[in-house]
Image (cartoon, rainbow, N blue to C red; front, side, top):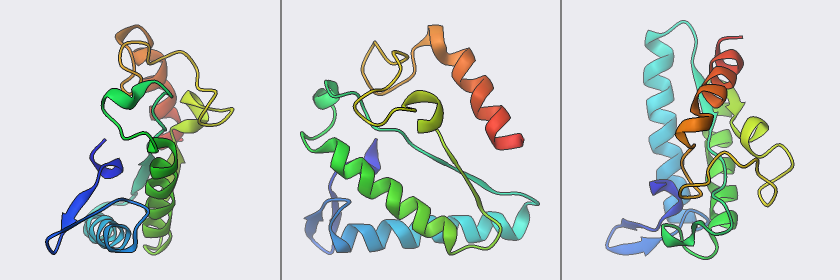
Amino acid sequence: TGAVLDRRIDGDFSGPCQEPARRWYRDDVKARLDYLSERADRVVLMLPVWGESWSGWVYPEDHLTRMDCVRATLKDAASSVPGVEVVDLADEVCPDGPRRCRPVRSNDGVHVDAESAGEVLSWLVSASVG
């Protein structure tokens, strides 16, 4: 959730589609992936999914565009660290795109409902472990 919101960098607020925040987030994620890559045999980065169209209670109105930027930044960071694999949670939750997600987040439009958690977790483990 936090990556979609504006971040204060050097005294100014910047959203995930603006260069200061994008650069900061990419560098931060890359450093974490570098750290993990030095200590683990396998590193998998899970891409987050878009919130439901009605999840504006927690996200700004342009949250779908912002999440596109977050996802692109994460992919960019992962591609800069050799051996990091990327798994896209959208393949399970929103296989038809950000405006056509499966009904697994009916409580708040962001978090997977308890009733669907087992199914989504099973997919996540299978996709991550292989």
